Structure formats: structure tokens, C-alpha cells
Image (cartoon, rainbow, N blue to C red; front, side, top):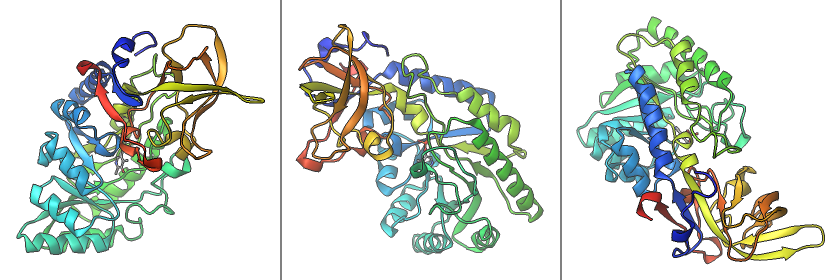
Length: 386
Ligand SMILES: *Cc1c(COP(=O)(O)O)cnc(C)c1O
């Protein structure tokens, strides 16, 4: 998707702001992953629903044969409704409610990724009431850092996620002993927007240490789930819109010692959907400040919160104008000083009514929208329906 290839004539009939999903980019991304999986038949990818749960986007991903990774009962339901088969649904989260656990038991999902001993006991109890056996993997906090924003690091001992290394053997023995629990393996997730493959190598090394220990203890580890986290190139959504899937899977192929019969599971979210999505907004006003020029757009942090929440960078393009570039702060209408999409952004000379594309917004965009200031939620459109 490059400037000039957005269907601007079609956009004129649509209320802004809205999300635009380029299905060509999405399908090419999915095909690239499937190509990698063909080489590694014991690998399975579960798309992390939380990155983007637009039903039309989910349908395309489920039709491509992927499983789903969920972090709430609502996501389990959204995944099943979008056609993900229950036997490919996994469910993680530190705070699963009884209602959510019951829902997942009713759907017979593939696996609960359990994050504490207390949760394990409750799942056993609820499964017993339904006369079922719940398949579970234990989420281990590997104490492996990811060199990414501190708000999206999840694999350090200080984070709330997973079971600590010191406690893990005890919890595995308990899981094996519980009558309504079937222990199938171990789960990890170290963070998000990880671009340095060294972090995944560190994860592989930790997984190897643990599986060797578990082998000595004769714990049956059928599946190893290494979570998600592969990053995307927010700086170059036009030229580098396919993430480094080959390098990523190669890390696991080279560094993770899978035993015969073991399957390796991945939970990719951002890397699958980020680059296919753009937030399309119209310019409302140009305001000349004393030392700044502002382009005030009709999208705000309620539509895309990443810049305000994580100081995230998104490439911003004026897709209506080809006039010489000027420098703007691109800001939204919400009554918060953090409602800024980009400071000192070079845009083609911008006028009221121009369309602005905020790129790489397919992940953690539409799904994180809120109605703060009584704003409407943005809609999402696929390129193929416009
Ligand atoms: C968020 C999350 C993912 C997906 O992370 P990405 O960085 O979007 O790939 C995978 N697994 C779990 C458990 C998660 O919480």
C-alpha cells in the first residue's frame, strides 16, 4: 500500500475517521507465514485475537487455517464465531473469571494457558462440575527481558504474567495429579514489538534448559508455546510491510530443541495485522501557532491510542496532496494534551478536507478504541468491499 494507491475517490463517501484494511497486504502476510509453516510441519500459529478482532479481518485469518490465541471469554467467543475451530483455540490471561472458564469449557477449546496455581485449582473444580477434563499448559515467566517498551514487556520476574521458575515444578506435579486436568505443555510470552532476534534466542535457551529438566523429571511435555511478540517496521510500511517471519522461525528452528512428537506453537498478533491497516482521517483545520503549525484531524486518541499510551510512532501521510512538504504537529480533537499522532511531521502542504493516512495501524488500533468524550467508535472497512 503506497501513497497514490489508496482508493481516495471511494473514501469520499465514507464518514471519517475509519480503519482501512488492505486485504492484499493481509493475504500476502498470511501466505508468507504459511510458506514458513510448510517447511516446519510441527509448528502451529495461533493468531492473537487481541491485536485486531474486526470480524471481517478474523474471517480472513481463520479461512487461512490459523488457530486463535485468546485472552478473554469474549475473545474465545469472537474466535469461534469467526470460524476458528475450537480445537485450535488457546486461552491465556492472569484473571480468567469463572464465567469465562465455563464458556471455554463449553466450547471444548484446545488449551487453557494457566498462569497460577490458584487458577489451576479453579479450572479443575469447574471442569469437574461439567464432568470434563480441561487441557492446560502452564504459562512460565521465563525471566527473559525483551528490549522493547517497558509497558509491553511481560517476561520478567517483576511482571504479573506466568508462574515463577522457582514454583513451576510444584505446579506441574499438581497439574498432573488433578483428575480433571490434562497437562499438555508449557507456555511463554515475553513481550511485544520485538525486533532483536537475540531476545527470541534467549527465550529458546531458557526453554531448552527447562525441557531438559522436565525430561529428567519425566513430565510429559507435548506442546511448547512460545507466544508472540515479533515486531513490525513502523518506519517503512510501504517498503517493508512483511515482517521478518523467515528470520523469526529460523531462530526457533536453529535454537529450540524439539523432541520427536512435540509441537511448537506461536501466538503472533501484531506481525500479522499491523501493516494491512491504516487509520483514515480528514483534516478539520490548519492552525498556525506561534512556533508550530498544527494539522487538526477528526481522528483522536480514542480511535488510535498507541501514540498517547506508548509514545508509539506511526508514519503519517497526506494522501490527498502532492504539494511541497511543510512541517506539522498532527493532533486530534480530544481534550487531552496527549492526543497527538505525531510531532514535527513532514506532510505535503495540507488543507482542510485532505485525507490523512496513519499507517501500520492494523494492530492494537480499532480494537483499543474508546468512546471517551462521547465519541463514536470508528468503523473498519476491507479494501475489497470498497
Ligand atoms: C498479546 C499476546 C500475544 C500477541 O503478541 P504480539 O506482540 O501482538 O504478537 C501472544 N500471546 C499472548 C499470551 C499475549 O498476551
